[in-house]
Length: 219
Image (tube, rainbow, N blue to C red):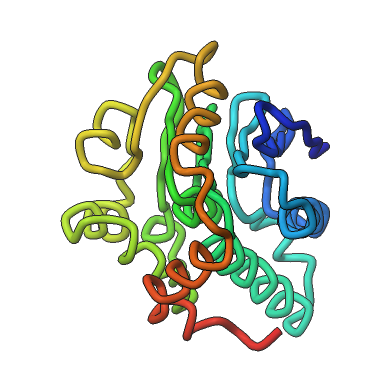
């Protein structure tokens, strides 16, 4: 179950203590968090974090098997639009990777401004090459926008599982921290970029990621 609290003016979204798959409920909760940020000028940043072994294990492929074609496409489109919304949030956003971030979960982490990864466990991984799946064009563009060419190739073509040490060295994440310090580190990263006018922050993000945003599905 997704919950929220506020730490030093930063909205913290706790994704839950399970696999935190991309489901209708999770997307609804994350959309609500973005709406809360938009409505409350006093919020200085936005952090997302899991509370168990996973940050987010991404799409639930078993659930996909129960969905009809139109419903499945509508859900994928919704999940892609959420990535675009996080990409252009008007406040600093930080993903606190408490555990595994796989597939859509990894892309969701990349849609944040910054990432801090737990040092002793958990991988960030795009396993689509092993699952026989292609990326939505916006997802692919997001990955290319956030990672170096070498890290893109390692992630997409090799399905590399990035631990904190390797991820930090490759620029996949911005910091690593012990489990006990993870949330504090993420909040501090958000606060370090806080205080900028929201309008220009959102506008500059839209300019910076214009090519990616142009690939949004129609809502």
